[in-house]
Image 1 (cartoon, rainbow, N blue to C red):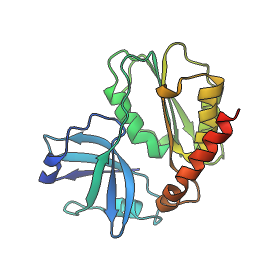
Image 2 (image 1 turned 90 degrees about the vertical axis):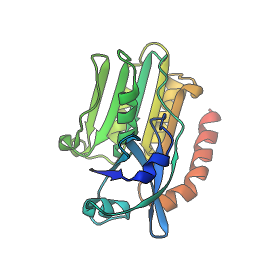
Image 3 (image 1 turned 90 degrees about the horizontal axis):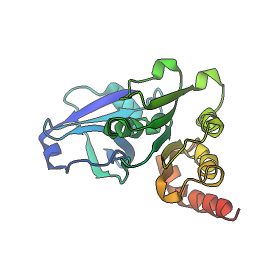
Image 4 (image 1 turned 45 degrees about the vertical axis):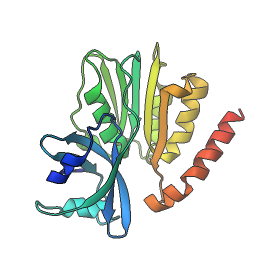
Length: 231
């Protein structure tokens, strides 16, 4: 994972980012790629974005790996619409690398003493990052190299095997779309979490680039919801 800090006077024109899942669409030639804002300092005119780099694959990763001071990039946005609700008894935060910035930003925003159960999947222990935690924060790290499973599989099992938290649960679950279907079922049908308390969505899907995923996402979601609601 590579963190790029963007700076410039144009950032002063952005509104204050009050949501923790704010994202921008970075422009690479004729294409765009969606990335969550890790943090934004309007006064300093700086915005941090974390990139998952897979060697020479993709558009954004190679750019981030080779970026140097003075390079320029344009973006659209920001968008977003979720932030942790202070009144919740428990904040369940679940994600892989693609959701790591939003989860970390949510932990930054939680009030002192807020209880959080956090499940994060990364490639190995070496890819862990420091998080804003308190005595009321339980972070469960899942390392893919220890399980030999695909993206999101071990993370799904970890959440499904966890004890149901007591009280008013608020959940933020994002990452590989292949883990969204079973976790949506688990939250709604097994744990009975009210749907209005859950933000759950696939940021990406194995085997598809962003254009391919975005063009098929609506059909994926509609089919998933129809199958689960029929139960």
